[in-house]
Amino acid sequence: MLSSPVWRGSPALAFRAGLLVGGTITAAVLLVVGSLLRAPIPEPARWAVVALTLVTVALKETGVLRFTLPENRRLVPESVFRLGRLLGPFQFGVEMGTGVRTYLPSGLPYVAAMSVLLTAPWTGAVWAGIGFGLGRALMTTASLSFPGDWHERWTRFRTRLALLMAAGFLASLLGAAWPVFSG
Amino acid sequence: MFWHPLVLASLLATAALGGAAFVPWLFLGATAGFATSGST
Image (cartoon, rainbow over all chains, first blue to last red; front, top):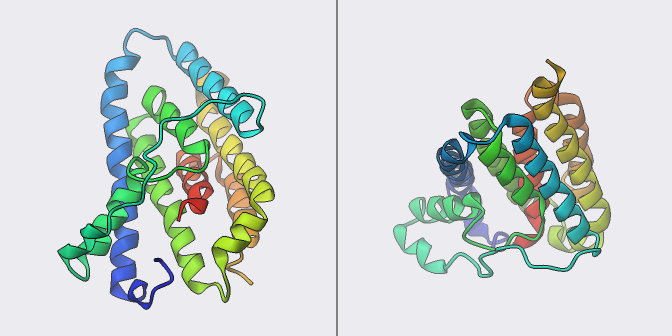
């Protein structure tokens, strides 16, 4: 669907804006819910839960553990496009950007969500939401700009891609935790 | 070939390694978001 000529110009920009908004919405919800959950739990214990989530997801991704993470296993309905040339792609972007309205073929968003839920300051939550939208927007931009089947390439190199993203994610998580444990 | 998934993933991971000390939450979200690219 994203390879269609419809996804160029202003509709593509509206879609990307929607991705950023969607990511920020999810981060805001996690922050609000998290502010209630955090109160009785000391910060080191909250980071321990994040670390446990990371290890559990890593074991699942490597096939050591077998279980299913909660996931909305369907595509965003095409009915969103009834809203028009710009609002349709925008809503599509918002729904994809939230990360809860369609497939999530990686475990990293679950660890990110747990991190925001239990540990992020409000600025960190906003950055994480924007970053999530930017990450998904990067895929859109790349798949539209790549002279070939971008998703086939993704599938072909998925193991190396997963390792690269895991390395970047782990460095970022350590960077987020560093101020807590270094002081 | 700038838009090749491996090139972008390498650049993003490198940026995350360098930027984790400054804007860790941004890169935490970005790497998690880009990792879901197989979904569409």
